[in-house]
Length: 338
Image 1 (cartoon, rainbow, N blue to C red):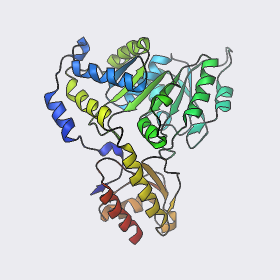
Image 2: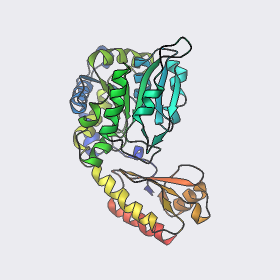
Image 3: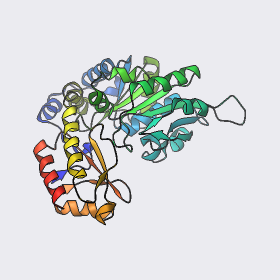
């Protein structure tokens, strides 16, 4: 099967498996695992932050950030289709006790002026704005890249109003690769950032959150409260370190595969590509085929291709390391033949 459901289906490389096997380990709750320490130090350096913390997933990283930045009764501002709002099971309400104020976005990007208007004035009737969250790349906008300029403008609003900014950067390295700029061009416009190691970078598990040292110290306690204090974590941190240091540069290859898929879909009867395909995600409307998204997903499965439903009439194709360009070309032939 050619699996294009998500870049989360990637398998660890031989180098990652060997690194896990040979990892020097210790009890990380005691601060004694040298491998995870190296990963955190390297991640902080790459992201341009003082310190970093290894967490089990992107969702856990985002939730730790919200918990650390806010207090119960606060309001957080975020885009209306953002992952934190749409795909994290209402965790910000359940865990942090905060309410969400969602704003419309264009390709996932919020208007800085609208963000400023949404920041709460001091009034006993209002909750305090505790955090602004930005997602880059934006999943439901089809892997759209939010420009550093947009992030800078939002961060300026936040600084004027003394509100921190957290970036859900699960695929932030895709954004950097997509526009050919260093990831620090994005991360300098936020207080904290979460990046995923187990999507395009191909590690088997884990994410990183990064910020200043005081934030990471508080975040470490929240990770412990959430059951994320780990023991010989070097076994999974070692593949993450390989992913972080060796897999970033090749992400542009996944974008090239997505461009081939886009062309094939545009030349397929009844199909229209509805995103700009900035990175490794292609979203297509299939209603012109006379099939629902569920039926179209099943049809491709019969042909040996796995994709994901993305709405009643839309589907999502996601390229990644474990799908070769040859696989993409085979997929293109099948798509055009349907």
